[in-house]
Length: 314
Image (cartoon, rainbow, N blue to C red; front, side):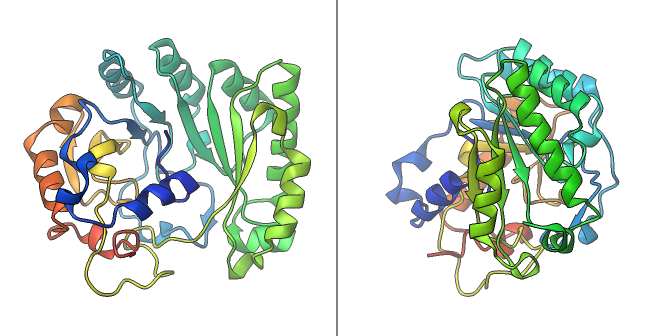
């Protein structure tokens, strides 16, 4: 299972989380370790997408030390039920030259499902071969335009033709290598800057992807990215229980664990993996308290959550 605020599966789960804790048996238990572990390899990015609050980022840019990454993977690989591992965060993961090595390490330690999100601008043939060979299971590509104009107005700083050609070449290389993974998800966010050209996107995407190996399209919707944007109104009382504290853990490149992947500035810290283990944080007093409070729809002390449009939806 993959948790991402713009995935259809996640949106479906969020739509069910509309009642306080006593009415959901699911919220009375949590797994010994998170079902999904989101590891930010870097928060640096080569794009300025209009829907992303990158101009509000106050954390310094960096890349996670490989030793810290290995420590985290070792810890979560010791259990029978291993988490889905995301290899990205608030940045472009391909800026990290050690990404293929991270993927290979995770697979060598028995992680069943590895996943990342990229803008594909740096997905050149040599990198593509390394990622495929390392064993990545699934890759989502953010592709928010259908021509030069709509793409560049939405994904500022990138080149439509370069990204599109990289995707085409990736599919070709994967076939030449006789591999079926990583499966690709080509995602589109219809909005004013790209003309919400969903039909054109589907035509373009279907011509590029290989449905036979499981590639697919995903047309999603804009969200507020916590307190980062104001696409959706946040009014009235919080109406939903956020399932992230029961299912997922987000780790920033410097080792700090936070409540959620939309906490791009790391203001809601729940622990530090430089000095703690994943299990200690996940089963510790901070996370236990968060689950108790969130189950009662009490998000006081969590400013990012209070601005999140997901928990305000009925």
